[in-house]
Image (cartoon, rainbow, N blue to C red):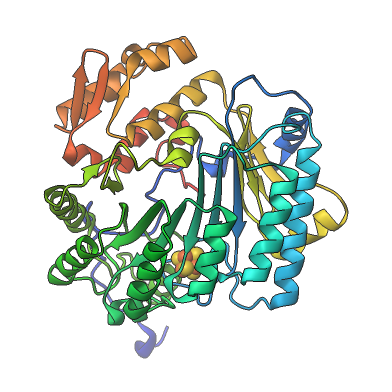
Amino acid sequence: MSETTAPVTQTPAVVTPTDTTVGNYFVSNYPPFSFWKQEETAVVQKTLENAPKPNTPLGVYLHIPFCRKRCHFCYFRVYTDKDSTAIKAYIDAALKELDIYSQKPVIKGRKASFVYFGGGTPSYLSVDQLKQLTDGMKQRIPWDEAEEVTFECEPGTLTEHKLKALREIGVTRLSLGIENFDDHILEINGRAHRSKEVFRSFNYARELGFPQINVDLISGMVEETESNWKINIQKTIELSPDSVTIYQMEIPYNTTIYKEMKAAGKLVAPVADWETKRGWVKYAFEELEKAGYSISSAYTAVKNKEKTKFIYRDKLWAGADLLGLGVASFGHLQGTHFQNLHDFEPYLLALTENKLPIYRGLTPSNDERLIREFVLQLKLGQVSAEYFTKKFGINPLERFATPLRTIHDWGFGGVDGDRIFLNRDGLLQVDRLLHEFFLPEHRNARYA
Ligand code: SF4
């Protein structure tokens, strides 16, 4: 080794427990996706051949994987380069997928209780594409009894014409991905829209009388500051949406932000730390409460809690069936989890060959199903012990005695008779706390 190549002594990077480092924070299912296996797809196929348990609600989720630009914090399966021919092929494939399912005993003859278009950017589709898609979906699984039809939108893709079409199609909740009102912050985080488009689309949507307009915000985007965050909340309150959903910025492995961190040898993401992000959500919740909103989950405030419901969330968290359609979609039928192939071409190819594009699955044990429902419902801030005892034959006060004591000792919640609850500080970090309820092998496992 020559003198010029002698190693330079580097100060080790210091990471504090509250720093935002790489990884999934948000717990959206259980057991973690990394435990779902390709070998289990035969079990999923078998599940499809059995009639469903009576009275299980059925939801339909369709992933629309197209976006104008890829946001730097995005970890979803999205494409920014697909032309109208590719989009048409995708719509045809999704309808074929639904066709195959609608003939299976587990689905045959059922109607949708709720429908959800997620992405990606569902509002990226043109009016003609939307009509072809939704007419085809309704022919295969009727929506006439659906309590809720949710449609995620990127404000810059909405025109009055498209909003009118969405209203005619039967969308009941429009979810606007605003994320931030500051154009510079939107720009450096890779968002395609600008704040002018937010106000324009929101006002059109209001005039058209959508039953529920939801606004999504993210606490802790790159370059977010306290003063800007306060302006975001003030502008949100001025818009007066029916509900507000706020996520704390996480940096999963497949984001542009993480790729840049990795290239620069950084362990800490260039966003606010968790304590700051939680503080911002706490502030937002308090301001929204002052403006008359109620907090309905760890992420959501609603203006009128009698009228504004989140059927998709509540039914899914209580064990409803979910038919997940589209590339990389997740579903849950009669207690079995499954996920679709996560690349565009293989997804299309499977359907061209009349095969369901299922990639991996998992059938959780009764105990794992209990954990799943318990942790998901705890995101609402409180659960009833009796509900779980009746449904699973296991008393959660006994099954979860250790984690409940831990959470109590940390000062984040407790038990009051039948009610197991988190206080506001606990609710604001619920996804971190939920790992305490997991089986040891799933705790802090890589999520995806
Ligand atoms: S709009 Fe949503 S899905 Fe599309 S790139 Fe941005 S975060 Fe991802």
